[in-house]
Image 1 (tube, rainbow, N blue to C red):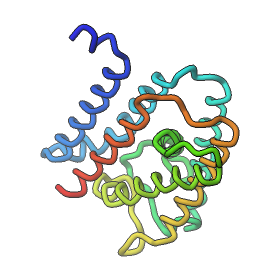
Image 2 (image 1 turned 120 degrees about the vertical axis):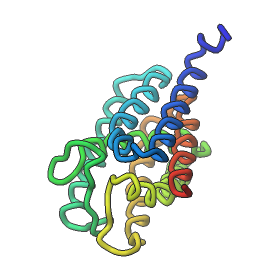
Image 3 (image 1 turned 90 degrees about the vertical axis):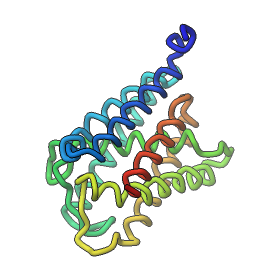
Image 4 (image 1 turned 30 degrees about the vertical axis):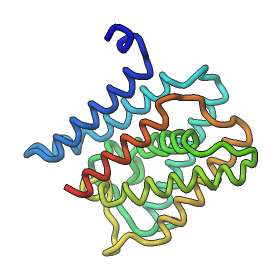
Length: 210
């Protein structure tokens, strides 16, 4: 037991599992709206834990993640206000404060997902191939996320069904972000990136089927 509490990786994974289990319990309780409103805190805490487990976090990684935040946020601002490239949608209240109709936390979500999917993808010497593999993991994540996001009050689509262009755009944007990551930084060294991706996939799948 002492060894467990001295292992940062195991502690971090256990902590992430616990907060997501609490989230699931909350979403299945009469206090569903309260727990859905805690989504930004869950996102921020998960990102902080992720970064605390990054091996040798250097300035170039910080710059890249800030760039992903800015680009991701900018793309969402354009998307919400023009309908391009994802389709017509609006953000709800449960992702926190907004600027130009876009939650500030959405850029952080982009940074975290790009980071985790780049870590889970199979390492390949070709950045183009590797970017495609990682973007595919991003697409799988979005396919799982979209129904949950509506249930959690994160965003809503104008159309009855989610537009195909959303998934195409998600893949293309993720591919570009991953391509530059592999070209200039390589695969992140982080033992909880894969578990966090899996924990969130399971979390959203449970929300979808309950």
